[in-house]
Image (cartoon, rainbow, N blue to C red):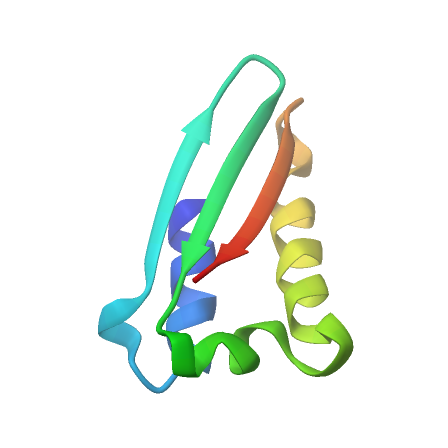
Length: 76
């Protein structure tokens, strides 16, 4: 999951070197925190959050094999 979010984010931003994805896992959920450069926040979120929703939908589809919930958080 971590690699999937990383590949998607790096293809969207101007500064792919500053993309950092951290994965935290507990019993029920996997939390992925996506950090990008301040100037790239708009590109990752999109108008009205459409790109962020699309990223979450793709990750949710990829995670459907596991019985865990996947949460993608976009941080600065």
